[in-house]
Image: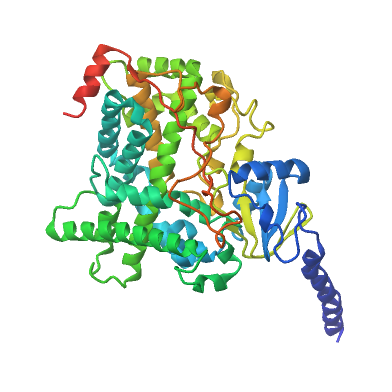
Length: 534
């Protein structure tokens, strides 16, 4: 009887306590943010062009964590390292979802690619494929592919430096599709490269809150494509056809080469061989996973790598002292009788710091891909409901003066240890490549490619005085300003966006259009460049 009385007492006390704590979250306030309108919330205020700039302005008024409403959807913007690290890294078990958008997942067909999958078993299967084939040891076996593409870039820059951006994009794509499919990219007008270029900005744009009205009014997806104002249906159909065709074409090519016994080493080839199944069974989940992972690699890897390389070229052009320091280090370690190799990386610490500074100074995806919460949570006394869209403002985080002194100055020394003359500021890898469990799986390939490109360009050339299309010099201030506007082919319409007859603007960032004159550092190096293709 005495024991029963104690048990009853515990239950009587415990139940109200548990009830209090379970309901307490619901009574806490949401984070502060701009006032919205009935029904639509802050939809009209959600930025499409350079969204990180608006988020940064909001942070100045409302603080490190900002709440807005996209119709009924809660959107939480993280503007500090502390909030991003605490929520996306330490609490990753409930912050690793992805928001589901009608345009992105259904109409465009991006929902089955690895970066956009919900956190669960299918995503884990995709991630396992990445980990098996994209660890540093596996990546190192594709060094010859990187050397070939980067050395071709050198020759192209000597021949036609005004086509800088096209040459860099071709180099990046050659490495990514070569690694993924063993595919040899055509020198000009390759259809696969056109498909990548067409869909990459759209991928990022469509993942943003407020980008398309159909995301909040799903009934619009049933509007016929010919209907006035239904341009979003035509955009989606064209993009989906491009993506499906390029993915299926390259995947089938690898399967055919495997059957004939002449397949080049590739992610797809190795994954299929290790799978050991009937490769003609298109319905097999494991085979479909390989196809989807491969599509994500070449779709995401090409533009991000290319933009990072272009940012580096512009950065050292407007900060020539950094170029001289890096070249002095390369000359000491590599010399002038050969071009740098991946094996030189550990002996070139300043160049390693320069890579980190490029990633920090000009992040390619300044707001990362949005996360979503899978459970209610509380942060700093604020309620974060389950199903919220979580946007880390990486641009603000990587340019925070509390973490990075003089953040808009390009200064690789910030990532050199203090005992070696640097300032040991926080590593920007988390932020540059995403957060938590959704960090970019292609990080190893991207870093190796960018580092080798930087080292090779610095070894071979010197360049200064970047100019824009009008011939006007780009100074240090303009160099940190992303180029305005987006892809010209991608137009909005009344159901898609709040503005009509305009182009979608940048959801990702890229530097100002510029050109420089690449001058070989010596006749000997010029000869090495010309011989590198023979």
